[in-house]
Image (tube, rainbow, N blue to C red; front, side, top):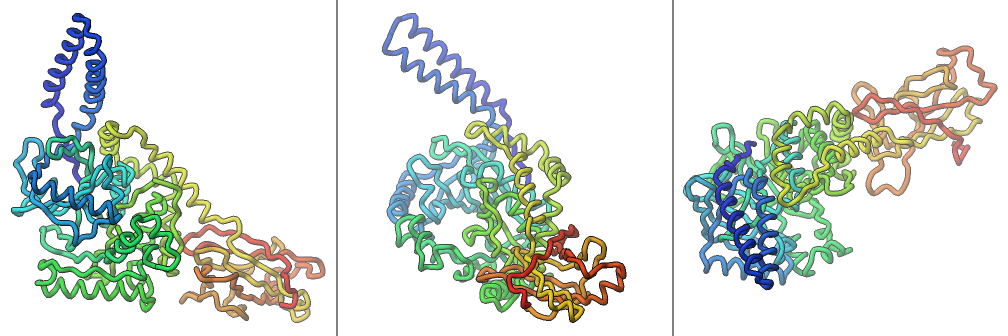
Length: 545
């Protein structure tokens, strides 16, 4: 993405003029002794100081001057009042109206514009209202033909831009996201984010339709909010699954754009992408049959690093159908990164071992100091420039410290204090030359069982033939034993029973003394990383097994 900078030199003379005028007026008031005028002049002076203090940073951003006719603007105000009453602005209730937008020094662009459909929590009197616009006459606005003008605070300011850049650096798709200064009908709207909307198509290098973009139909979610009047009450509904925005209970949004519907190949892509998404919702397809497991696992790891849980919401997550891979790719819009202590919900990985392993592998990499250092160099001076431009409205961007703190959390996740529960079976089994060990995964990630440490002196690599009971595991083609993670609906631990043959232990170490108590430790690692952890097996609660 390229940020367009506007020269600050043109504004300096105007600022200097007003500075001299205000100074002169204040001096005249003091000389004439007009006590009533002095406070007003002082207020004007303080306002001017604030204006001058913020003019330089904001002028580094493109300035967009938008104008809407009086009658059309009144229609927009009427729709806003209706949305505030309902708690939402439904797409059918939101009408595009004509407007013009001019970037400083450039030609005037004709657009269609409307209030952005969705919840009405951004339409208060003191809020920056969010808009959706579509350009006309086959021209683009700062590189976009369909875009949203958003309050940057909704996505934590520069952090959203930085998160999208981090995704792009990993080869993950995302639309352009840049900051502008908006003047609407002569009023200074402050800093806005101009977010490109890529639906219904992502174009290729030749600016030709290349891939279909799929999304969920969020109108049922908006209806729930409308019924309750506010989003808080809707989310608290203990009965409706729509209130929690669970994508399993949403339909895939239809595409009525002729760019897709009139093109046989694109229509086929939409149908195939829809089939994949519905297969995921119904459970007929595993997540790794719908997504590229390595890419999606890495995407989830980045979401976790940035605390960008909004990126997974059906409101904001879209999918690009990749016809070459016959897979869906995530396309992020609003993410609100580093806005809280959010961690990735386990259900985001769909209980898919391939995605879970890819996530763990990616977490091991992106939680290193080297990764963060490289990211700083990738974002470079452009991030610093945007920070400077934002100080007109916000002056705190602790991005690097927060990312480093989240890296520590991710490292702790991969090295848990108790990855498994391991219990010894009955000591009576020793008469049968067997040491029984019951092992249960205690994590939300799959674990590989590597083997068993015998009294700190002998290591016994795991053998699939030693499994005598339990179903919460699977065996890979190369005979590795993977303990399945705890399922979301699980009511307890699920043990897998290993019978270790004493003869094999003696073969490896003929000096071991079985007359004394022997300590058994189970070696495991999170699937996808190489770090090994040892967990001692304790006497079982039921020594009969």
